Length: 250
View 1: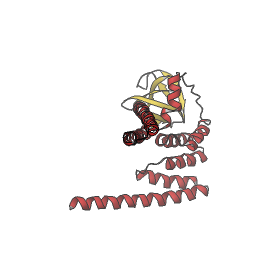
View 2 (view 1 turned 90 degrees about the vertical axis):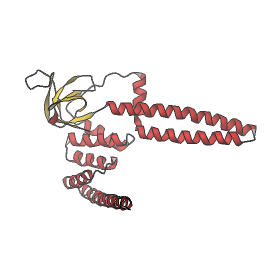
View 3 (view 1 turned 180 degrees about the horizontal axis):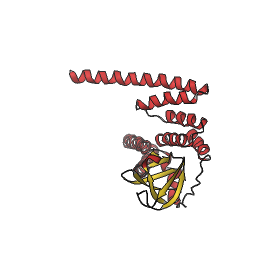
View 4 (view 1 turned 60 degrees about the horizontal axis):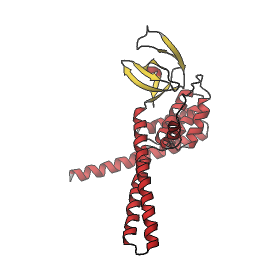
């Protein structure tokens, strides 16, 4: 009985959070439309504190910071929106505008054909989306196989057999894509530089040599962490150590 009461309380608590988040989101959107971007950010942040995550929330936060010409936070939240929903074209387009405001111009290393295909196709969807497609094709394949088995018409049997084979092939493809997307996601620890200017060292100490400098809004990938230092890698392959407080992981 206690377990049932706990579940009911949990449902009502979740419903209350949802109602609060929806109300805050609507109020924040109104403030944004009125040009009160700082006030809108405060309300969007309250939703974030409720641990309500959505690409729409992060997209609107990115827009608010962009209107205030705050490069790093706008890029950070556009990236977070795309992390949840890679197919959010509005976030991708606005991210491109924000990136034009950066000082650092990092050239991406040349990609192989497979890497280009992965970026253009596999990583466009999250691994959860590919997994759902795998489930859909497995269900479709099972239904088509049953139709093939119980069909008496030779024409229909041929049709159901061929389409069930196609579904099985698509199942394998989407399963492989889900696995690739998951591995890619786990291998990345993206972060955005929030300091206006920071030195990247060749070792995690203040007295080590500076290899290069980075500026606000630059995206990096975190490879390792020691004390208050993080080892980062840029899109052009450069590697170095940066003070942890100078960046924020997505």
